[in-house]
Length: 224
Image 1 (cartoon, helix red, strand yellow):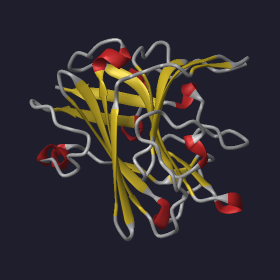
Image 2 (cartoon, helix red, strand yellow; image 1 turned 30 degrees about the vertical axis):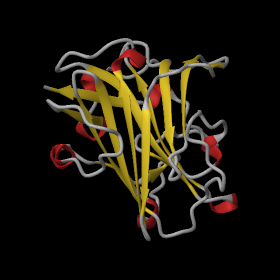
Image 3 (spheres, one colour; image 1 turned 60 degrees about the vertical axis):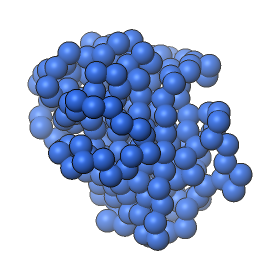
């Protein structure tokens, strides 16, 4: 029997992402927009199992929102070779992107129904995918044709990656009101083979790696 999701209002501070509102929109590839400095960092430090991940694999995420879009920026250490496509396509979604290095956002606009959520992924190449999900204990239904209109960007350096996404509210059923609380989780996949790592902001605690556990989502709080 699957337990009902915890109330977003009752979650402790470690399970809350604070999304700070900004007055002006900006592009996904504006990696160093001053607004990012005012967003509270969320640390992604554990594997899906709850075990601590090595410092070299950890990441942080910051979330902003405006009248027209949700913004997420991941900054991650990258001390090992990238696992990416050698022929990336940026003009369309990339299937099976989750098999490579990637950062992900799962977000459920209806806090009372976290089993209906959207999945957004971006890779260090700038490749991306967006999906609509309906989860139940019996099966997971995926809308492969979901088209969010989100934009994505990536910047890599010698030892770090910065990945961003800008998701318009039209893709999520409408903009939230200040003070609204949605459900969400953040993830990072890194490496290959036996050493591949699956990091989760809120660990999903499944026997095998899985991110599709909406009852483990944290809270996304839209600060006015």
